[in-house]
Image (cartoon, one colour):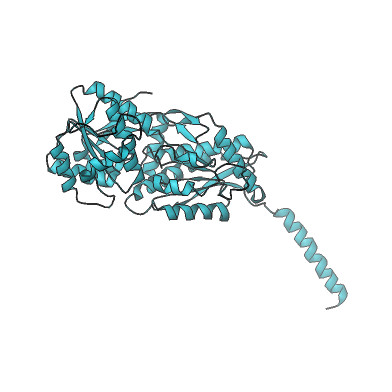
Amino acid sequence: MSRTKLAAAAMFVMVASYFFMLAHPVVAAERTVKIAAWGAKSGPLRSFGVNSEAVLKGAVKAINDSGGVKLGDGTMAKMEFTYYDSACNADQAISIARKVESQTQALAGIGPTCSGAAAAMYGIFQKKVDDKSDTGLQFPILTDTAIRPGLAKKSQWTFRNVPNEITMYDALFKWLRAQYPDVKTIYGGTETDQAHSRITFAAVIVQKAKKYGFEWVGGGIEGVTGKIIAGMKNVLKVSKSSNWLLADTNFSVQARAFKRSGADMMIISSHPFTTCGMLKEMRRQRIRPKVLVGLTSSSSAEILKGCSAAAEGIYIPTGFAPITPAAAKVAAAAVANGGSADLHSAAAWENAHIIKQVVEATGVMAKPETLKADRRKVRDGLESLVKVDGLMGEIGRVQDEGESVKPYVFVQAQKGAWKVVHDPR
């Protein structure tokens, strides 16, 4: 081919390419608001992760269906999330947090499920922002499930949207005192290998029962005064024969201890799987206390599915019940996505909308080159929140602790359903 023909061919290609580009403009990479979430999707507590993922899926869909999230330059971006399995394991939770912070474009995290895993994971985050001597993770976390009091204070990057169990059990036992004036004695047990169950039982539940005049059967427990944490070790020592482990499946010994106590009020501080095991064994042994109290985490669909007859009458304080239009909508969305909404998983819906609110208020750009700055904006935005809308009403924020102040109700298992028996809102 001659040089003239080569030049002509080259010119043709250039002109054709030009007109092709006019007809098919290059589209910039679509920006998205990315969230990373993790919880227990395996092991005895897998339902917690399944439920949170189901609710989060519904929340993200609702946000995107309404137009998405407005970025700092006015661009409307879709929200997306990735859900990891941390299996209620501290090492896995830590590994996921490190991976998300260093290898993804996620602006914020939601999780983990278990308080023990959260306590360990929060420990690898930078304690105070702008402390150059602290190389801990600098990535905002807004936890939806781990509920043990005080955890978020470990780092200024960690926040939680969970109910306050100290407040809820204080109100519950005050209410029970008025409802059951003749009830005098208490007895109970807990999962000793689960930090949430164990600490809430020994440091909060027994203390609050004592505060309102309910005494441990046999004359009380040394050091227990009604003040949080007081005599905690003695509570665990006295209840030793009635405690169990998360993996236990036989509760005959513990139930016999409950029966021998003859207590007016009995407390089961454990998660759904072992709560059902214990309740079924109590029913088999015909143990019928005047009052039965459970752990917040067991105010769930799993109890109703697994042991509704045995659970009949149990009282539990909770930060979620489908008693508002918004809460009912979330409950339906959870079921549609293969899960159920409870005080833990429903918070995932609130968290997604809180993150949307913070992103829009702080001018996040959601670009790879602004990732570090965007994460700091989200952190600062979470810290500055005073009040946000929740599914059951207004949620307050305790800024210096990274904690929330949430509405709550008392529910009782009645004929295969959770019925609200007291609404202090």
